[in-house]
Image (cartoon, rainbow, N blue to C red; front, top):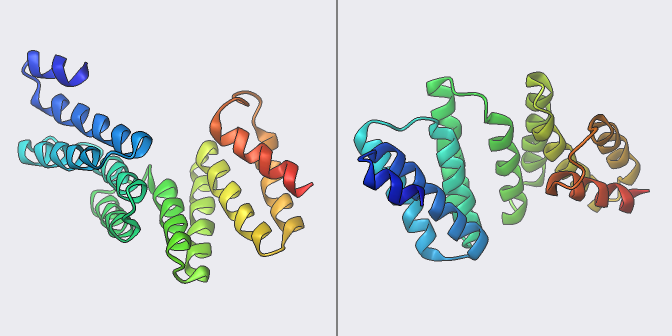
Length: 187
């Protein structure tokens, strides 16, 4: 609907962003390769118009689509681009999530486990510094999962439990449900 409305109203920037969103959804949720094509087309249209706002966010969406469709190497390269763009443009708000995703993809690739863990630590540190609790939860959950898989269950529990306990609502959201499930496994 957003694509059609933006087209109807002659709003090419919003059409590009809507197409990117539809493509991301199709790639990530439905595993449709044409979704990745739509994401790239939306990115290209936004860049061509000079209306590429929040570039790190849209590059993250591209990386998520690439990863969902079995291209972790491409996703890692896109995340590297997003981090570079964020640094160049001083668009730092998304950096904790970019670092977390970077670490997870490194783990999926069987890349350097120490470097992947460092990414997750950096994501956690940045989220704490910026007081972005949801991203702190995600980073703590993923780092705790890594530690638990290595047999460091108490360390994992000690990390994740206080972050989870900070929340007072939203316990039916995927992030909190996953964190709770991991805490239950660790106890």
